Image (cartoon, rainbow, N blue to C red; front, side, top):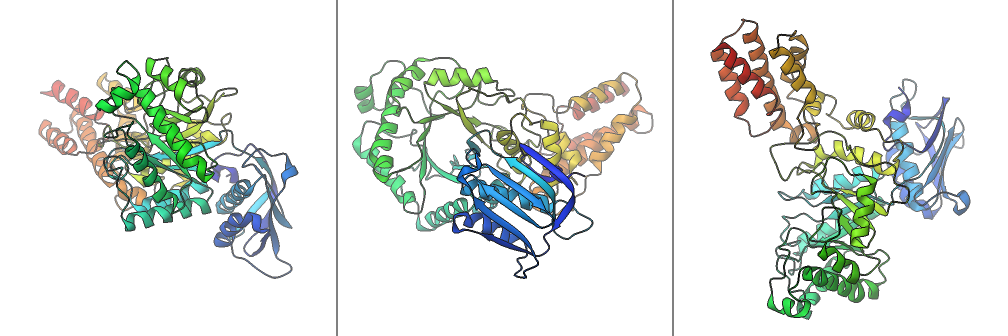
Length: 544
């Protein structure tokens, strides 16, 4: 198997040779400007001091004519050289080297194939936003997510859990000391891995936008997290009533349609001018408008375009809140409607609209030809299940880094290979891979069920159901642990399908099928609920 099959995202240009550089013990060297890359390598590889050891050299070269975050990696029998366009590029070159070293090799415990890589990202902003409703991720989940992000060259994590009370409902209140310390730890972890930590606040449920005291409270909250290292901020005005509800705001901004856009722009302008600018923040503010889905102009967007500072980025979810396809036209039209450059808040693979389901398939339906499109990047909104989300998020990273090479099926195969536990649970992954949520949960199984009911051979359906029924229940690791309810549901729904096939073959009883169906439908977890139970009922109707 090609070592590149173990690398996500897929590099721009890569040539592999037949020889290998043995890195079982190696000398790792570089200047202080590449400290994060050196730390990553020294943590994962076994350093050596002997003069004859293979040398891994890391450096930055402004003259390498690489885009930001780009790098080259050259490896041969005598050594490895990583050249970054900047510290981030050097770090990503180190991550690529470690991914290649992790590829299986029968000859060496740690080695890298002879190679010549030249690589850089397509989208400047690539990341995730913990922006779902439901139980927020744990601190351990977030720390591991930042490590995961670094491995796959995702450079942004947005802290915006809807059910963190200090983010939304109690936005005025400072974080308790313990919570603040954890935020500081996340900020440090992100910085060490070249992940931009963006702190978001959602004040729109209760804020009196025109009140100077309220704006001061917003700045004070930001000041608290600035003190633990946060340097990038977002203000979110999503999922709130579209009209202004406080009389002082109606007096200040009017009561006409779209007046709330004036209020939101004013708050953003105040925050940028009175908080970010005096502190020399080098990243622009990002905001989520109340009108965050769709591509056409609205009165709200017109007013926002007129009054929002020009450098503020606008988050947008696509033609709808959760979508199966986003075209280049959609992106361009949305940016034009806001009068600002947009970032895609991609509600994928989020499941807060239906906690009974998990979405384990690849990112699909996103435009890959984006030349001239005013898109800053993509932040994917994951599931409540942090570990299970990594399967889909790996493909998001692949997409955002190298648009032209992105192939959902191939990217998904690599993601399954890289995520511990995913290969063992592949039948479940396949059963939970459909997107968007309203689509058939499994067109392939639906077709097999229809064929069986039409009197065609049932062996193909039996084989697929047998795979599901035989899912292991002892797979170690967080991925399998989070998915245990869906494993149990899959086994029972498959058993019901197999019982129905037995009845079709006159080898079972209706009572046994009804009992199996009842067990399958007792699960809260939804695996193929729209496919197998209807098939089972159809079989029962034919035999009663």
